[in-house]
Length: 183
Image (tube, rainbow, N blue to C red):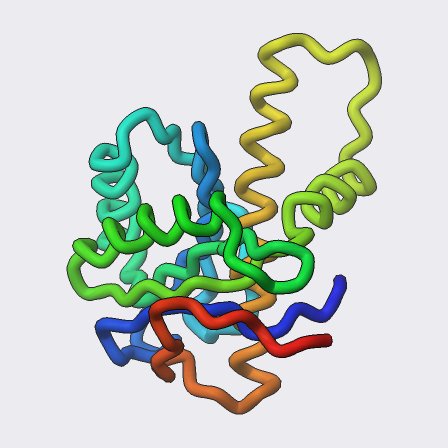
């Protein structure tokens, strides 16, 4: 996996991974991939995909998942440009992330998600090659798997960075967003 620097984010509740799990979110125009971190903050796993027809409905589903799983941190993938600049898509994701701040008992952190979907696709294809001609149903199921896997890559990168940097997950990360350091 390419080493990505810390993304940008916002915090409104100072809880660490030992007080609850983290959810990773790969927010797209039509679907939101969701991943769950384990209670130790070591491992992220794909969980599900939420359809995004209306933002309010998607936030409600994510709030229910967070409550059910005891999530305290929502890690939202932020699609920065190649040089770390905030793109139009990143601005749309930030707007959705601000709506997630209404989820009770959680804080929202934006995280650099460059290359995560590509990484998830490559990992899934290496593990599960799909023989035969794809049908519309199979393509949609594959997109859902990729979205959830991309959320897991985002969350795993966040968890790994927090652990390796010795930075508590509760550390506030600035909002408005800052570009990550040059590589």
